[in-house]
Image 1 (cartoon, rainbow, N blue to C red):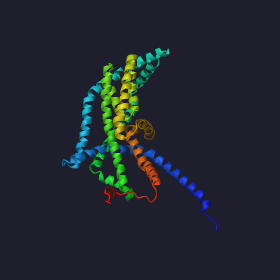
Image 2 (tube, helix red, strand yellow):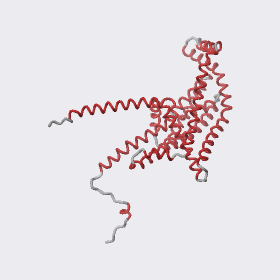
Image 3 (cartoon, rainbow, N blue to C red):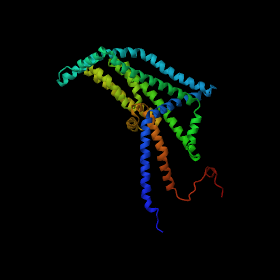
Image 4 (cartoon, rainbow, N blue to C red):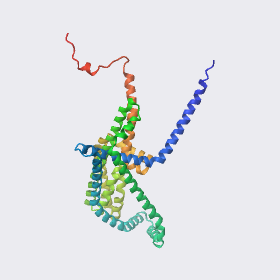
Length: 371
């Protein structure tokens, strides 16, 4: 009797390929629609981890866990509020002066550009003034943009409150969530799942420590350097650049553009000095802080961090850049656990001779019998 299964094999392969392509397409569409939700969940978990650690330490002092989490959350908010209270008053004043100086800075830069290129020094300032005059003559045109900005700020505040409240409840009792995630795996793989979650937790905590150190060091170095060269609004530029260190390497570049342009309106020599300050701080960050703090905590090569930030930015957008390093750590840990270790284990089993029994610990500890 002829074998009827053989001619159907190509059809089965083609059907599987079509189903796989359809599944990948659906997963890509879902990922694109749910990327903001995924980032929110990711940020919530990162905030809940240190809160849970704080509560666990206070539990040793017989402090109830809910109170320990609340103390950790309030302490974190108090630190942020204290820093803002010290920085915001001079920051606001310098920001106001900076905004007031923007027209003169723009005119100066425009004049230098016209002088360097030989073009006529006219047009842009008048166009900007005419554009702003239309809003003065017809203020109702501002209602739409102001409403959008207000709704955007309200949405950000609401999302932040939701993230903090969710992180609070997760930190109070994380075991059901951890146990539920582990139980999704077969019983023989649950020990491996627990180890995987522990590796992820250690990576996130290490990233938080590294970011805190990087922000503080970058702020003080930039503030000192910009103050030494006599650049106005040094505090504004230092705070702005310190916040951008969350984005490794690229944040330093983005933070250096405004002060260099502002210094150029004063003189080319001061712009060069500002550029030297930012390059020096970036070198310290890239060659000292990131390798010694970030890379050691996360066990990631600096080149992997730099390239990974670009990849995460493409996948998750601008918001993903601020948590690019923990996302990258998650990807690499999952790749190591799901792929690399299985390949290495299979290679070791292939190299091991058949029938060879390794001695147990008891046999190794047992002394040889006297002859």
